[in-house]
Image 1 (tube, helix red, strand yellow):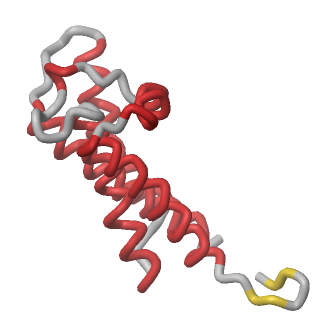
Image 2 (cartoon, rainbow, N blue to C red):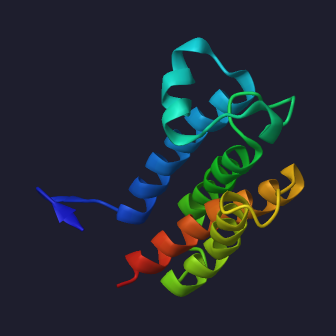
Length: 135
């Protein structure tokens, strides 16, 4: 895209933005500084029993959602992901199902399941954005 005579690579610009946001949330998940707690609380319930002891700032699902975004968007900066909107949604589906089933009381998810589904959803979001950028 050309803006005022400058070429702007939207994929790289978007990946830098996602890396920055992801880094803030991953930092918040592991360090849990008081100044970030209001922001972390907007995006996560922060329930201690759904968190890892070594990442007290966010629950397991949100911690690995942001790790998935951070790693995928870092990769996106250097190369195109094999992305599509459908693949991205498919990768996000396990988190949606796990969270929904837990919410309606069918079962209590484990932190390992939250870790896996959160990471897949974070990677899925980047995959979906990469796929949407092609159109």
